[in-house]
Image 1 (spheres, rainbow, N blue to C red):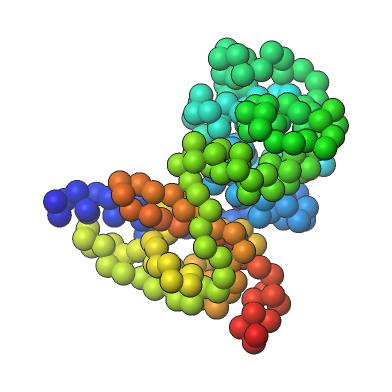
Image 2: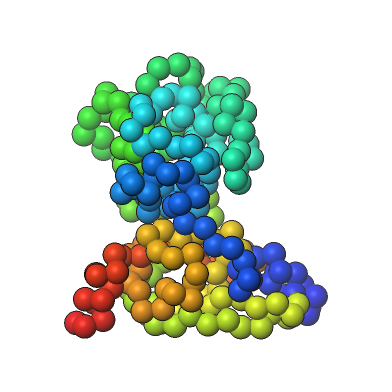
Length: 240
């Protein structure tokens, strides 16, 4: 039993010496776009491939959508710098898409990622990559989005002030970040990410989290994504 707990701690908890990444890892254009939080949310959920060359202002192609849909359907490997060509090919092979030529529409995004459950205002419109990321991230808060997250083994967690960040000893001799938001005290997932905030998790104490994701592994709930409010908003919340 002790060995099992130690193995869980080793492979699922974020060790206090681990390197946490934020939107800066997604390329220089992402931070300047104001989309960092949305993009990190989609990367953590493994809906958007984690690549360093995402161009928010470029047209969102059917090739792009095919690779995203294949990743979200577990038809290929994710992780850092996945094989985008292989993902798009898998989408074609499994019949998710009929073509990877041309630009993707909002209707196609709805069909491929949300199983047609959204009400789309402009179904024939063709978004840029940044617009697609913002749209998909926003729809995760809907019932169809919750279903998509559930398929990815995730759910939205609580938001509010980070009241405490501490390290606790693991059975294997390492240590784990444990972050408390409101009444929820959870360890940070070893593959967790942050958005709109520092990569040093200790510096999150006192900041305000506006979006969080929780993943359950082996019956243990883990923070897998924390997205902060701007510093001035966090400071105002502490004064209220």
